[in-house]
Image (cartoon, rainbow, N blue to C red; front, side, top):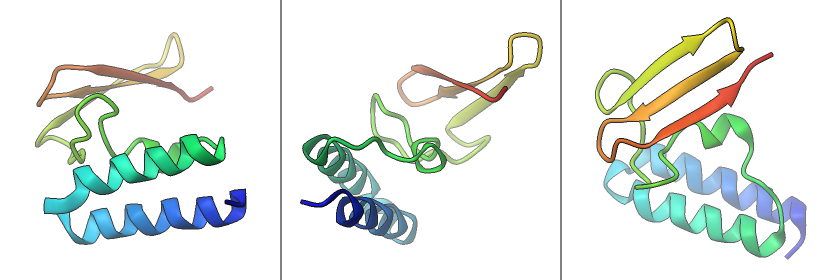
Length: 91
């Protein structure tokens, strides 16, 4: 599978996950598998939409807590479903 086609399919799966939240977990897993098979990473703007541990779709202040550490230059996303913490840099 070409990398260009894989990126398109990943974006389509994320769009479908936004439209059908009951199937979001399945679509996130499929997108991750496509990325692994074609050896590409999921774009960072899409990666911040779900928990990589439990595949829950993040909705701010419902099941996700966001904290900014301006001194060290990163943002913490904490999943309230499973408790995992993901850290993304912004500097």
